Length: 188
Image 1 (cartoon, one colour):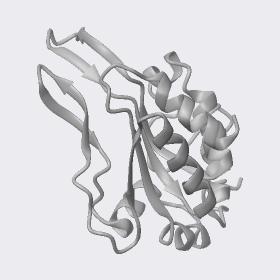
Image 2 (cartoon, rainbow, N blue to C red):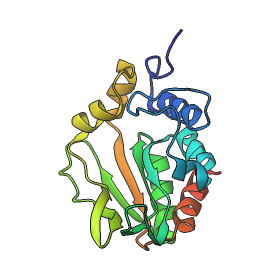
Image 3 (cartoon, rainbow, N blue to C red):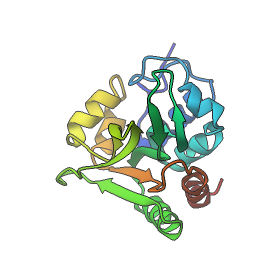
Image 4 (cartoon, rainbow, N blue to C red):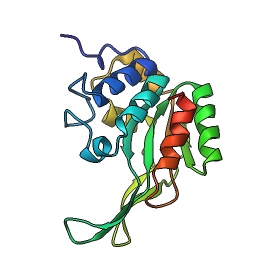
């Protein structure tokens, strides 16, 4: 049996494999231990917009919905910003996503090969303490090797030239603006 990840030759192939994983047609993703996305992704109906973005060429690797402040199982007060990150090899797609995000006030952070890392932005807090940030990168090669183990060599070469792209809604708890911007840019 072949693996869509090992057989991938392009970033577009990786996007198709990721869309299939999000929709349950592929049981594995080499950079993720679970056979399915997190419950908050499924529960918040993010599968279709994420799958569409992947098919368009934005290979998403991390995402979360915006969640208003609420008490967690640990009794702390949690809040989240809507955010997504991933890889784009097509400069026209990157321009469309950036323009759509700008119109809706969504923060766009890009890290190209050779760029110094952006400090990122907090996206999850518990009792005012940052627990998660998006947009920071330890460097292209390191990020790619930790996120895409077992991916075909040709696709890895293309990823090394791609732009790591993060979208973050700066408003805590709001989620529809980010997904609307992404949907518009990819034609969903």
